[in-house]
Image (cartoon, rainbow over all chains, first blue to last red; front, side):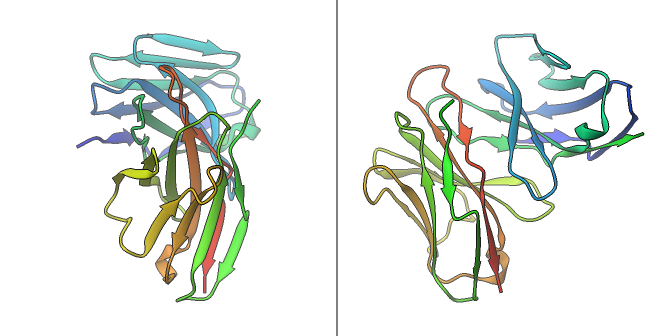
Length: 111
Length: 114
């Protein structure tokens, strides 16, 4: 069935780049998302990419999609302590299909 | 920017009581969803709803759960007899019909069952 896998933890130093990786199984996915969740808070949509794109850049965020390998990554440049959170990778299709989430990657940023 | 709203933000209830969680979708959206997130776990799909009927539901969405659009605007999730393990954050999401429309998530309702 459909599945989204992510590594559980990532630790980086402030100012370094963070790269969070994700793999998914559904080759018919239309959208691939990155959400950020801070403790006790809701889901903040950071960015998303259509499956016909390879890359999307939005300020400090760069999303890379390798559709052949079903691999998605999120790069955060100049990581700050405020970036410490859980980052969820997710995928869905248009037309009323559910969103499938990964288990989330907890990013620790050391000052 | 339009947004999905949910009420209440936090609901505390006794085991066995009924709860109704409410969602106000973005105005032209016609696909509706409920998801839940147990503390420390991933976000799980519960149910999708379109054209006044359930399109898909997960194994979590058993007979204790129901959804409806009582007045054509709100979208509700009812849990008939809450259990301790229903304690979670419940997220509503809505989506438009146009190609390219993504799902928009609400801020969530934190349900605590005592």
